[in-house]
Image (tube, rainbow, N blue to C red; front, side, top):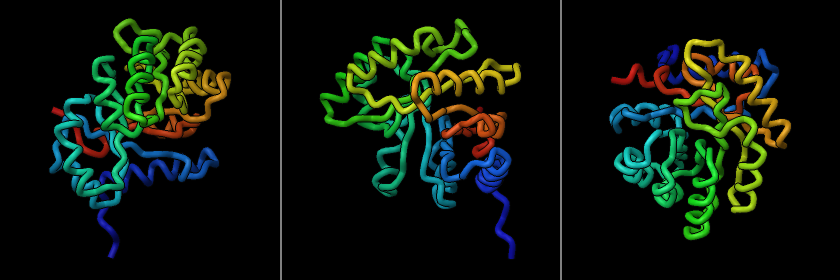
Length: 220
């Protein structure tokens, strides 16, 4: 009998298809299941299907859901993909395995101190305000080199760049621009692409795609 077609299977097949077109290995593309606003009952079916990498937007929400799940499933990996307040840096370092929203000098300072205190180096992506939008977080494109240098001085392991393109505009040029900025700064990992555009992101070099509604359904 054929296996049932689940949302997770559909997303994985779409990732495989985009990778083939781009002549890339699927193993080089990490699917992060964005579970923000969804409870443990919605997360468990994905874990049962083999998904192990999840993402949350808020430290407090993650603290409520994940410690018990991670005790039950020690191989789970948790990414912080939302904006991080400096006063939550210690909590974030304690809970998350990767942070995607390093975007300003004050957060570099807070995370550097938190990692030194915890003795735990958490890989980070620098979030770039790729569409130059006032309402969005992210480092200005022109400020990326200086922020990367500050992160290195603070002994923060920066592994790549992250972006959220403007809504309602074709995402591809913004993904291509992020890839160019990363290359210019010697970084090879790109956190870009969500439920509506992750295939395009893969074609343009995404190494981490952040997929929520395609896996969990629309949020309330």
